[in-house]
Image (cartoon, rainbow, N blue to C red):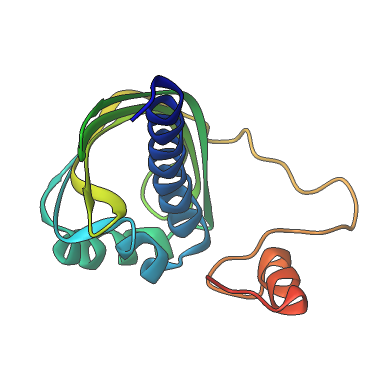
Length: 172
């Protein structure tokens, strides 16, 4: 393999890993739990604040928590991947906004997704994830009503993204 073809293969692997992290965030924010599940290998493990277990246990734990909120939005920042053949370490910085929590109100947290990614049968996915909470702040009383009519995000289907994907005729 030439240097150029190896570098291209590494770049493609890094992009595929980044897209796993992006799909995870979309799935969480849009309540698309099949999309979230697809980001993990079937035997994947997750470690979150207050949770450690398999991907299926994680989804059973997180789904009611997310459904009790009015919404979430994950913003990704720094993303670095260390490739070791078909195994990789991915670290992604994230700022996560949560609103309408029945007990805690509105809050924002800073975190890092530290992922052990594995490429199996040509597909990168999470083998093990640590959602490392760095900080949390209360945003109670800071949210305001929309300033005018216009597009608004919805969760669990019916979002403008879903409508556009239906119109284009694609739904991965």
